[in-house]
Image (tube, rainbow, N blue to C red; front, top):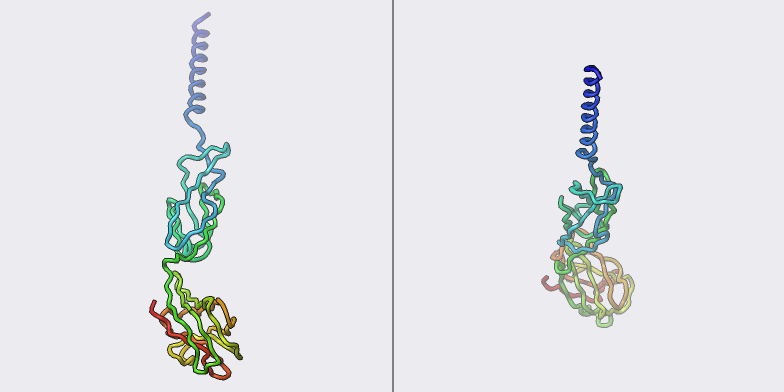
Length: 232
């Protein structure tokens, strides 16, 4: 074997070593990063009270089903006035209603969680009265009445189970500033002459706007029953 042949073999040997080194480096040291393909959000359905907080968790998986480590998760609420979610998944119930929470990573959305928020009963305020008969003895309305304000400021007038009244034409329920219905507003026709019933109070009226509840016969201008609301 002459010198030229020895040199050629030497070059081929070194080239083979170099190629093997490059291939090994590509395979071992440059793995493809895991990419999120599916997300799971827990819990899926939630009932909260205003003011409460709850921690959501979201796990994202790649095509093999393995969890993606260090996935950058973003949180979304369909109505932040009802539920807001911080960057670490802590949800806060801000108002009464229903909202949807979703987590995303790498453009992939998780399943959605439905969050229903109800008023905290400890935040409810109320004023109470007992209706007494009106000036005409035969036309009577009596029983317990409650004016209630929930955590959102919504007012409801509630007649208790002990409510009883004589029947009459066009009996209406009034909230008023005095025993004269003209100083207040009508909440509508009396729903029943006995038992529990509820009346929605229009927006803009506060718990202290009116002091009297009146059951009133409109066509004959007769008070069937009235009561002064106590302090809240």
